[in-house]
Length: 92
Length: 114
Image (cartoon, rainbow over all chains, first blue to last red; front, side, top):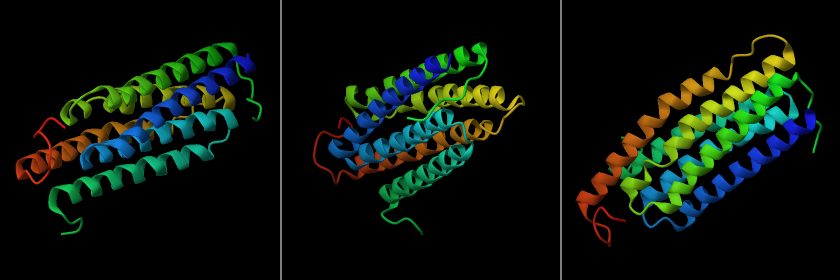
């Protein structure tokens, strides 16, 4: 049963890596700035999910906390970038 | 590649199914970023991954660690609550910024389409 779990974790990591590649494409070739910000938001959420899958593989709860931090930083930076696009400055 | 610690077969099957399902839903949502044409269509696509994929993968993590430690491990609920709260805020402010930039009209290209 352990090999089934290992293979499904590998498959999930591959799928999440492809999803991150799609988001990275949108960051690099996004026609406008808001497309790039949207790609960055997707990329940070996908990185968080990839860390959760990696935590299942390693069996330690440390990766959960780093996943939480990545999700938090992705949210804050996306909000700051959207605010910059809206006003032209972040802190008013 | 380090070894995965073995748990009971029911927990293994549940964890594997939820992991693959969540990763597939996330991939479909991120692939929508490539497929859709305009920004206002594109902004809908990754919400699939950020809500359903996150719920699936965090549930898989909860089931696996509960079976591993023989006690309920529920701190992954924090991730679900956090992501479900912040995704609508992010996308709403992003769409508001895109609308502002479209109305300002200081960008080249067809307005509202690209």
